Image (cartoon, rainbow, N blue to C red; front, top):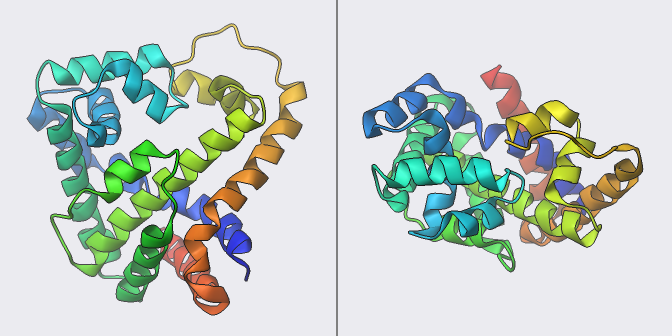
Length: 244
């Protein structure tokens, strides 16, 4: 497989598995222990890797979430706990989930090694969230934890690449969400209020942006080579099936 083919084939699984820990009930309990809402934990848990920045900066880095919705979560969390501390708690939960859910699966060690090679090779230019997360030390070095953290990093890399591609396509983040598979429901989930622009003219641009995303992410998988790239895709799909 070419690096671009590996990027295209792995992207949907990475986007799913890289965020799976956040849907775990134990992760949501961590938010309550910190004294903040689940939304505040999600926003600061992602953008908090940037440090104590303004809500506007966090919103610009996150991209696809409405700025007002980002500000609501960011400011609510900041009144209780520093953003970087929320990010550290989020990473700890990610590693915990990975150790529990991914660690026992066949091929966990190999998956973590392949994912980490892609993460190290990835170009972080124009992707501040990915760069910030890649610089954070892991609290757990077990194969499952490393896999989960690596998948989260690749998810941020794909998301950052898509944000760059969307802007290059002449679309706004809201337009990209509306033209995506979830449509208006996705826009609501990301905090964008109606009325919404028509999506008909946007579909072709979104498809172009998806293709550009694969090209931007492809260098991360060049380091793997064709055989290891294909193995990574196989392991990712098998992992998602094993998790149910």
